[in-house]
Structures are given as C-alpha cells and as structure tokens.
Length: 266
Image 1: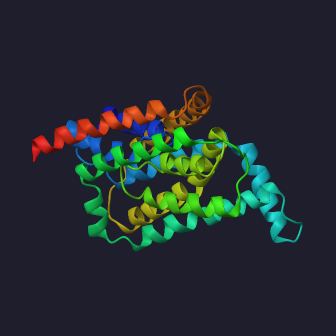
Image 2 (image 1 turned 135 degrees about the horizontal axis):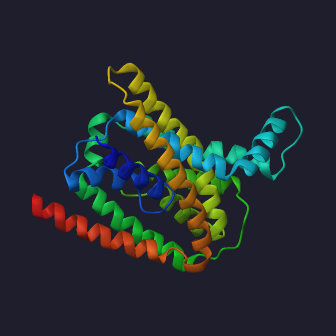
Image 3 (image 1 turned 135 degrees about the vertical axis):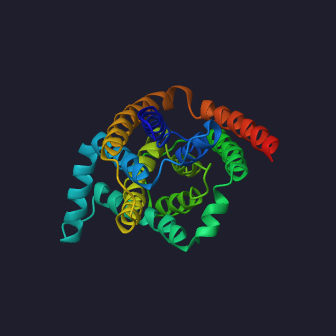
C-alpha cells in the first residue's frame, strides 16, 4: 500500500460508512476495479477506529445524556427516554451480533462476491425507494418493537452491498419514524456495531504475525474520522431537503454498472 491508496480508501470508508450506499461494498470493490492489493487487516482496524471516533464525537452530547441515564436506570433511578434509548440500542445490536457469529468463513467469502454485492445494491435500493414513498414520518421516539425490528433489519447488512445505515433507515421509515430520527437511531446503533467489528479485527490482528505500518494506520484513522464526521453532518442536512431518492438512483446505477463489469469478466 502507498500513501495515495491509504488516503483514497480512508476517504471512501469515511464517506460511505454512514451514507445508505454500503461502505463494505465500496471497500471490497475499489481494489478489485483498480487492481490494488487488499489493504490488509491492520488498515481495516484503523479506518474502523476513525469512523467510530467520528460518530462518537458528533453525538457526544447525546451520548453523555444517554450513558448517564442508562447508568441511572441500573441503580434504580428510573427510566426516562434517554435510558430507554440506551437499552434499545443494546437490544438492536443483538441480532447482527448473533448472525455475525454464526456465519462461517466460507459463507462470508461467498457473500463478498461482486455479483452478490451488485444484486444487494439493487434489491435494497428498491426497498429503500419503497420505504421512502410510503414513509409517514409520525414519530421521533423509538419503541421496544422498533428496536427489535430495526435490529433484525440491521442483521441483513452483513450481506455486502446492503448498507447498514441504508437498511436501518429503511426499517425506521417503514415503522413510521421521521427521517432525521430514523437516521439518528441508525447512527447510534452503528456505535456498538463498529466497535464490535473493530474489536474483532483488532483481535485477529493481535493474534496474527502481520507487520503493522503505523504511519498508514494513523493516516487511515485520521482521514476516515474527518471525512465521516463531515459526511454525517452533510447527510443529516440533506436528508430533509431531498430525502433518500438520490441515494436510490446512485445504488441502482452502481448495481447495473457492477453487473455489466463483472459479467463481462466472467
């Protein structure tokens, strides 16, 4: 890996992690399309640290209230909306954790097929379009059933091309959440998911004999953090103005192009 590749991949990770267009699909596909070698486990850990830092910093005030309320609920100080939200985020994380653990290495490798990614990109673009068209946007609070349903939808994002943020926002819209709140709940759900994924990769890295290039690790973490922070802010401002349809069109075009490219190579 050279400095240009490190910056390009970090920008891509930061930009796509929180947009409904699938960061995993882009990170898998870019090296294939341009002929780069795999960026390696250590770099994956670094960019996960970067995007996790971005979402924690962006929602730092909300997180302080949520964590404080959650701690209060444990010691018997009652359940306010922030405490409930903390428990719902935890509950919504369980399905993706269980499914992730149950997937064997061959299954994970099969899901990384470019044509699987292309198909998921198109299918879940259409589902997002349907959710956008029928969205009632009635609520800006999450219920227990919302947390369960969004959590189940989030588990589908283990298929590259689905988009974790895309599928959870889709679920939120279908359940009647307002766009901005559906996005907020999606981003809060991303914190334990990214932390768990990054921790597992870090454990793999620790158990391996991979030589860590710390300069590239730092660059990857810093660039992905800055880009992800800007991406979250930009997305939330854009969401209520144009909705999800531009992302639907992007996904459809991307999926069609990918099918054309990879069928041609087959």
